[in-house]
Length: 134
Image 1: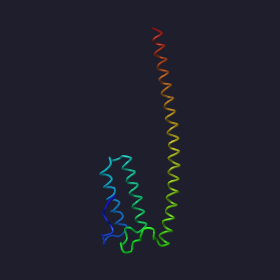
Image 2 (image 1 turned 120 degrees about the vertical axis):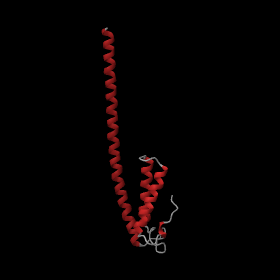
Image 3 (image 1 turned 180 degrees about the vertical axis):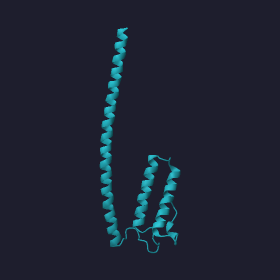
Image 4 (image 1 turned 60 degrees about the horizontal axis):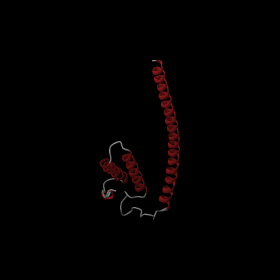
């Protein structure tokens, strides 16, 4: 995605480097996608997820002390496992909510469709009645 290495800013804390990297990612994606578009929202959400993961594995730490991929100490591994479970639980709640919303929206569309048919049928009946009355 972005080629900038934010670990080389020695005076910033890891949190500051992570925040700067995320801000740069948002700016980058905002230049690619239309403001308010679903594509932009998805790209920003993905960038946030990548940023959080990188922060948790030590990407923004001192490069000499940063964890190597797939070579985590037990504390880092436990933290990642716990956060993964939290993410799955949050996603389960989100998917459940979206499913409910989709079902409710589908019901509303069906209701509106039948309402439109009834209005059209009433108008046609009224026009036929007026035409026959003349």
